[in-house]
Length: 239
Ligand code: UDP
Image (cartoon, rainbow, N blue to C red; front, side, top):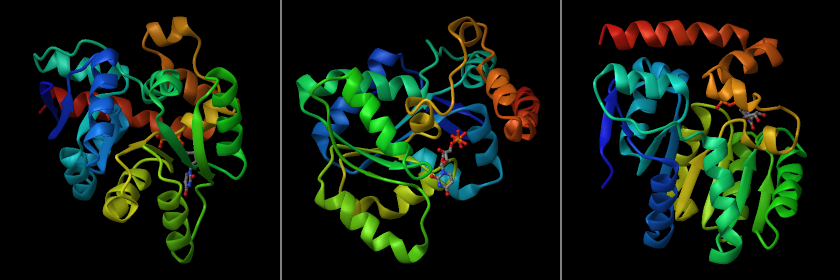
């Protein structure tokens, strides 16, 4: 069992990328419809006023520390948190080992065409990878039975859901029994980055813990979300 560190009432696993990948592989084998979340400052802050999200996160099989804010908070609270495990990077690591392990993926979410582009990119980067289906993330309640049936019949080992936070976590939690997928992960903007629609920050900015700033600069519509960071820091300091 990994050590879990409590940040604003959410238990986050203190894992390295290597340990996170090992945990996911065990969950694939266990076939228990496990949920995995990638917790950044925004998600942790949201969970302080969204009890449903908090419950889902605390019931998840693995919550990785996605984001410099999460790692900072753990350290501030006096815990060990070895490194940041970004959701995007975790997906790449799993995809990289999948041709030899035979893991099958389903890509669900993002605007029409994006998951297909992400699939094509994955097939180029990781020859032999099995992506057994894609579906965009814009749907009504009436479409849900068909989406669930599509995912179920393609029998993926890993379902990647990119519907944004907290929609993806709530959707996966609500349908996990019906879906019967060994591992489901909420992956936010991962397909957009893989499809080349959104760029990740340059490495120097990631290392300087400034990826959040880069994202806000690139997508000004997100700038309003920046307020989450000082709010998060304030809440952690006063928790
Ligand atoms: N999205 C979706 N369905 C929705 C709302 C959003 O598929 O109803 C997608 C959106 O197109 C984007 C992703 O969810 O690809 C959310 O990305 P973002 O970077 O905002 O993720 P977050 O920061 O919420 O993790």
